[in-house]
Figure 1: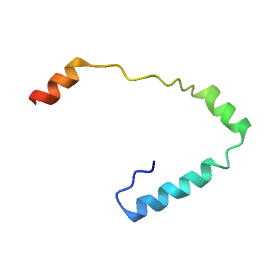
Figure 2: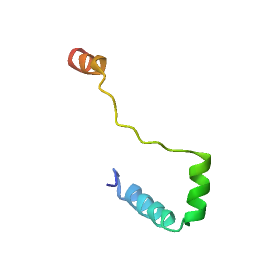
Figure 3: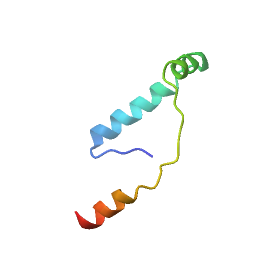
Length: 55
């Protein structure tokens, strides 16, 4: 999914995707070692729901 509000943003996003394809597995491993990303499911926050209903 690509989020863009203008044609210029869409063009920038598509160019960025082309750069990602050039990343080698070795470079990706180095990036992952420097900046570990551990995805987590978002946790339910009842206060957020409460605020959205009353503010």
